[in-house]
Length: 261
Image (cartoon, rainbow, N blue to C red; front, side):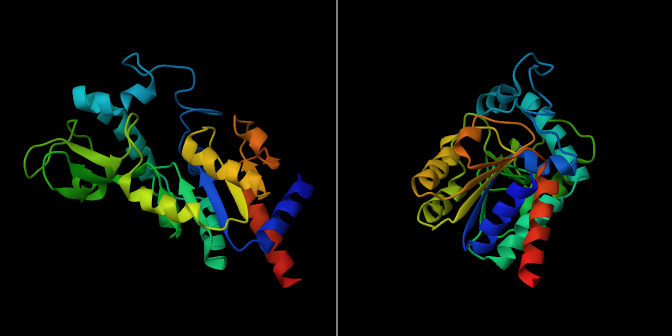
């Protein structure tokens, strides 16, 4: 693995623009469970309601049984509230500070990338800490309305202005990508990317595969960091079977040593 790390670190040093595509595995070292894959909370099992987690936190379930959707959103929110960003998030933010052409495309809703300092950020699924009412213009944060998902309360939460349903500003299953991400996607389509990191995700959604196949056509190296092989592994040039925090910390240390030598 040391040889691969050395080669990848050299790619980082030479790159001007880097794209990090990250999923739940990035936050695994923060103590947050992934929902599929190694250590997945719902791998191979159904929720207490007898439905897959994707159905429990879907657009249809929120409309018909909002208390079910909020039950699982609350579990995720409470876990995020107790955790914080880890070394992997820090290294990505440090690389962006060093190389301003760096972008992060995240599937995560925990907000740890922004909290760690990343600015060129595409939050495909939104952020769980941002809340709004489905009936009126009321907007707030989970910290303000729900004490950061830390205190017991009746679910689903109601709007203090109109008694409407409160929901987080995230993309539920069955909904389209966040509109706020669309313009950034267009910018990213035209950005010259020198290397792509695929970290902690195992899904082959189009917004992930599109930049990967473009990179392959242009001979741009793709590095996958994941404790297990995924459906995306065959696209990558380099595979590092390890956790994100450990791997990115090692890569950062190699780059630092190269810069001072």
